[in-house]
Image (cartoon, rainbow, N blue to C red; front, side):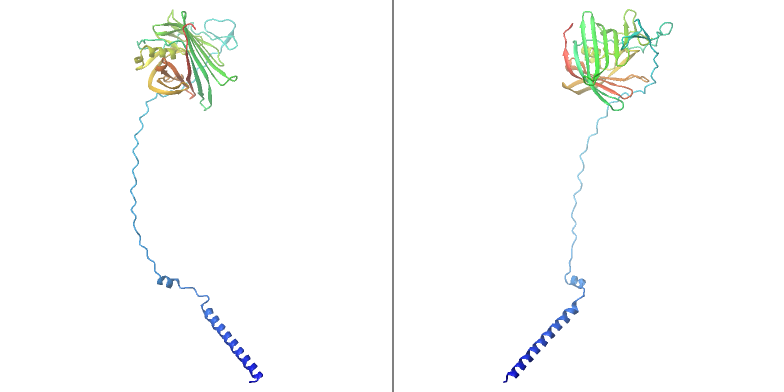
Length: 358
């Protein structure tokens, strides 16, 4: 075999193999090209693999009933505050340089005399007749009772301060002094000073004179005229007949303590006391609201709660007192609720017993 023939034969086989390779690639391309762009038949696929599910009912437990709550006990009825009448117009004072009956010592030391209408005028109508109830009394020991003062004005403004209720006894008689102020030193504002002086007897405290000095006002005096049996005032022409056991604003809390000490059973029912104030007198009717425990700086104190509500049409404040049997029946809280809505509460923080005459 010649060299030319061999070369020609090898080239022919290479051409044949190359053509066969090209043919195979064309066949593969045509096969996969026919499948391109088709979307698989999901329904058919799902038919080949069906899925089933069974719903099973799960029992739900019934809700548990809530425990029953006993109803709250009803609140005891509270006397409603009567709407205040228009304030009385006070006559203009005339400043003079001499004192006399009906004179008030002003803040500057001058005397302010009010027109005396008693001469040639009918006296003011006396208060309603008191029931013939007399109280057995036992005076508490002389003491200094210090109190915390909290006042909330009608507009919500809150104040704090301090007060002192003290009383002494001597052979010549007794003296009760009440002072109160708000704020702290040196910005403390003195609110008022009440002083009651008189004697003691079977009816407890027997006032003869009470003076009252309030911030920005002239001093007033209330006279218990024991000789002629009348009750008169420096700031008005009113005149009342004295009744047994009559008191003034300063002596009332301690007189209630004396009544409770005399016999606690006397606190049952209403307690009626004729009280002389700065311009008039009226019957204070105290009702026992019950026994309560109050929080103080001395700790919790059990006390009897007494309430005096103002009469219909009266501009007076509602007065509340708490008397503590474990503390000699001293008043351990005193509260005034004014017709305007302002509330002043005095709560004990210390009690110092004093010896007679000290």
